[in-house]
Each structure stands twice: as structure tokens, then as C-alpha cells.
Image 1: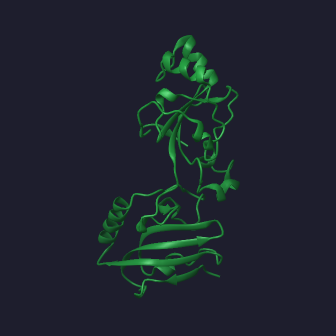
Image 2: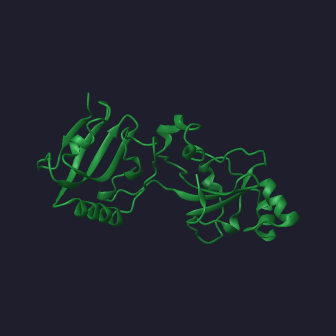
Length: 236
């Protein structure tokens, strides 16, 4: 049986023509929201989702052709910057579209859960970046995927690498972008140097010894550095 789809827009969900839309996805894992575009009805687009899934169509915009629909979808994402924490099988949809799914009602101004970028430095992996949540983690319902989806490995806490604890580097950390390093890497910096970390940063981190074993340890972090984007880093 198909998903339970409800059209709340007050306009017909036509079976032909190009359109963009905004939907509310209700599953046992919670409430989610999504922009998208399609040819034909929105209901047909989501007809293969499980019968336990409720899709509420909140907005429909009609367009003359595919190009206009794509352009409008891009505009919607640019004007409504929100949290897109999902990818692949991690997310509420079983037949594609999780990458474009929000964890909050972005169109109506609901804020995203608090999150920050973490750069994890280690001798094993070099530098890895992840987007993490200290309090409300929208990926929690998909914890069971950990170990089967690489993307999930760092969604809940730093990985144990056999290099000692991950320590915060306060002088390279900002409220929105935090740097961590293993104790072994910091020791290596003091002995022979390491690209991207000075001995001053390493010594300070070792002396303060702020151990980070969970992303909820955010409350005990110290922020003395500049914000970074991790734009050119390796993401996990």
C-alpha cells in the first residue's frame, strides 16, 4: 500500500505539467520537510513510500517547463537556508530525496537544531570534517545504520583510533567550527611538527586536556579561534 498522501494546498495536484512543491514528511522517526520538483503529480512522486509514511503537500507552484521548475527549486533553497543533515539511506524517504530533506520547517522559519563543524586531526586519518549536533541530533533515528553507511561513522561521537583521547584545540576552535586532535598527534607536533598545527597550539591543548568523547561535550569546550568552513577538507 502506498504512503498516506494529503493535499493541504487547496489547489489540485495535477497529473500533468511541471511543478515545484514543499511537503511535510511524517514518519515514526519524526517530522521532516522537503522542497522538490516533478513532472506530474506530487502524490505520484511519493506513491512508493511505505504506508506508515504520511506526506502532507503544503505548497505547489506550477511552471511552463522543466527549466523553470529547476530554476524555482534552486531559488527556494537559496532563500530558505536550513539544515540538510541526511544523505542516501539516512533519512525519512525510502525512494530517494533525503539529501534535499530538512530536519525542520524551514519555509515557516523554524530554526535548525544547534550544530557545528568539527575538524578531527589524527595520525591515522589526517584531517576529517563532520557536521555534528550537541543536543538534538536529527540523525538519531538512523543510528542502526552506523557501521553500514560510512557517512554515519562520526554522527554521534569521535571514532576511537588507539591514539589516546581526542582533545579540543581551543586556540583553533570557534562556536561554529571546532578543532580536535588525538593526544598522539599533539605529542607528534611537539616532537617534530605537523602541518596545520603549531607547537604552541599543541602544548596549549595538552595542558588544558579537554577530552571530547561525545558531541554533547560541546558544553565544556573553550572557543578562542576563528571560524572555518572546512570547504576543501575530507568530509565524513
